[in-house]
Length: 399
Image (tube, one colour):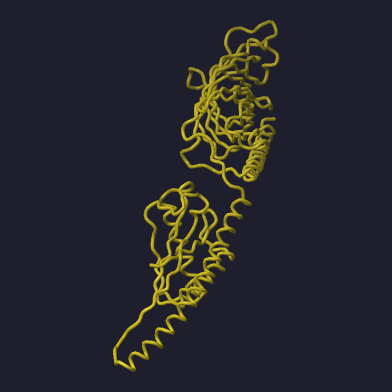
């Protein structure tokens, strides 16, 4: 009987992992649809505490008085919201539980009643990690000042059962699932009503019967949210594409203007050379000429956490490559990364990869001489536009 119960509990744990992963994936897609941003590592951390009541359900508890099984409960949680809909936390809770049995529990005390039932009393501490799904944000989108939010969750952990004696301690894997009803009191504080149920192996109370043991809890409590709180509303993919297209069109127009200026400069240079040759022939003077081609900065944009140059941006690079090859000037390539995502150290390395990617395309694909190009690292944490999307960029300009 016990072997069948163990198998059933493993089946439940597998189902729990699959369901939690499915909920996490669907909520992440919903956040992307609403244009929400993931936040920094130190943003949206919280701590919660609550008190309430709990009822233990073991092998023979249903035969005893329900009111005698209600005991005080506490809980303490610490966690973080990664997106408006997805969070994780660690929670610990429990306290003394009471139950009933027929004389085969190590936690029984006193004499049997008229039904032959003995009272049981022992302590439990359940520590578990939970996947939190803010259903209100996942369905209705992110609203910073939403008064009520419904948050289902599931978690795995360890439940510790014990009494004063050393030979009465037990540790079992636990699975916890529940609902949080969250009421916003202020930017920093929420009021919570939490209802949950824990299940564990059938011998948590020291009695094996083939049925899972459980602990149902209802608590009232408060959550304090550390700064930074909330999420910055980002641009949708359509907004980003329009901004990139507008920028690309502007640069293409600028390149066309530069090409016309270059053609005019070439014609002027040819006329100057002819005039100089005429002067040398007539006066024998050694006159030297020089010409300098100036290229306005060209921005090559990248996707988040990427140093791959898109096909669209390669078109811009092809145009500027022709301008560079037709001049004797030298140019620099500087990569950048936004400040809102990633650590400063990672972003510095990403910036350098972006500049090298542009350098390699200009030299290896479009035939620009390496002597005319130089990769220049940005200053520490420097950004050109102070805009998260536009700062994922590499810029080519005169050295």
